[in-house]
Image 1 (cartoon, rainbow, N blue to C red):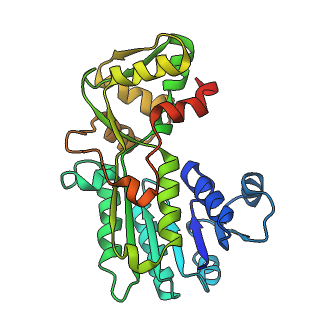
Image 2: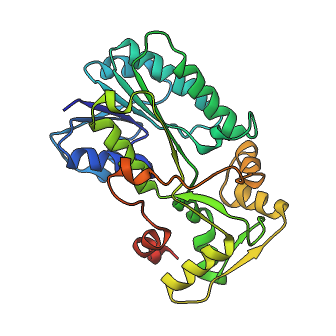
Image 3: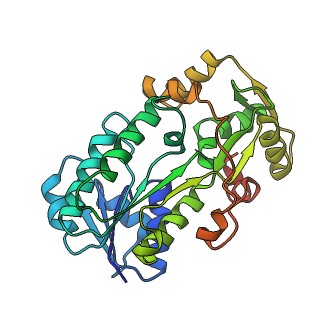
Length: 289
C-alpha cells in the first residue's frame, strides 16, 4: 500500500485520519512542530514516522516527502494558508507524489470572493489544479464542522441551557462530522488514484436550523436547550473574543451565507457507510456539554 504523508496530523480531522490509516496498516508520515504531541496521540507504531518541522521548513519537507506517493494537506494558518498549501503541493509533485488530497472548504463553491475563507481556499485550489505536470488532485469541501460547537456552544449549553447565533431560528445551516471528513480522506488515500482522479467532494451531511439543533441537544443531553437569536455584532464578538479568531475569520463566520448549500446525498458511496448524525456525534461528546 502506498506511503501516505500527512500535514496537519494533530488537529481534530488530522489525528483521526492518521489513526484510521494506521489501523489499515498504512505506512504513515506526519509533519509536526511537537513530536511529543504526536506521541501522545498516536503512541508507538512501526508504521508511523514522525518528522519535526513547521510550515516554513522547506528543506525538512523536501527530504522527508521523498518516497511517498500520497499527501494529505490541512493548514490552519488562515492568513498565509494559500501560499503554504501551494508551496507544499509544488514540492510534493516535484518529489514524485502521485496524489494530493486537500482539505479545502465548502465556501469555495459559493460566490467568488464572498469571504476571506472562500478566497484563501479558492486561491489554493485553483493554483494547485493548474500546476503543470502534476499528479492527481482531490479536494474535500466540508461545510460547518460538528466540532464548531466547541467554540462556545458547549459552554453556553452547560451554564445557560442555550445556544446563540445571529441566524434566524428557522434558517438552515449545513453541517458535517469531522469523522466523516477523516474517513473520506482515508478512503481516497488508500484506494486507487485513478478511481478518484481530480474529484471534488462537497461535504454536507445535514442542514439544521438553530431550533432543530437545540431540539437535538435537548434530546441527547436530557435537558431543555433553547436557541437564542442575537445581533450579528454579538456573534462577531463571540468569534473574535471568545474563540480568539482574527478579524478576517470572525467576520467571515458572522457574515456567512449558507443558502446555496445542499445536502450531498451520495456521500455514503465514498464513505462506504451512512454519514455520522449530529445525534450520534453528541452522544460521543456529551460530557463536554
